[in-house]
Image (cartoon, rainbow, N blue to C red; front, top):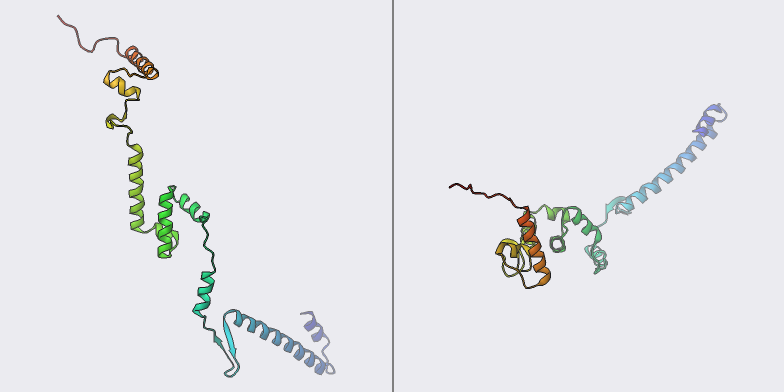
Amino acid sequence: MSKITELINSLNDENVDEIKEQLISEANVLDTNNQRLYTRAKKAEGFEFNKENKEWIKKEIKKEENKTTAEKKPESNEPDYAKLAFLEQRGLKNADDQKMVQEEANRLKLPLTDILNMEHIKTSLKNSSDQRDAQNNMPTGKNRTGGSTKGDVEYHLAKGTTPDDLALAEKVITARENKENSGNKFSEELFTE
């Protein structure tokens, strides 16, 4: 701007031709710079300049080039920690559930968010969760009724037996005494004659 201001201020009849020449030269420099920038932008967008027609033509991307870039990704045995963290954040803490979701995402080539919104995945995850919960809440041992086994104090209190194991027998006797002492000292039935 300052050059233009100087030129305008120095305008007089004698300097008009000189000023025109300076403006033309500066315009030519700007024009060549703009042309270079335009060419770089077009090439970056994937165009080629056809000298015969003097027009820009879009390059065709070869499918083989895309395949080579896709094949260059090395497959690692390391888990994708970002995906695992995402799944844990979404409430999938079980490794089997995470593996199932990731395998489905790889098979369908879809992102995890899309896979988690699919009904068959939701149903499968709920079923496996219910099955794990049922398995975890199932009592252990041969006698599955009542949730206690022969190794539990509650089992012997309910049956009224004393176990052969001395440590367990001591616990059972102590529990039986505590139950009797904490119980109601009065009879539940009225005594009438």
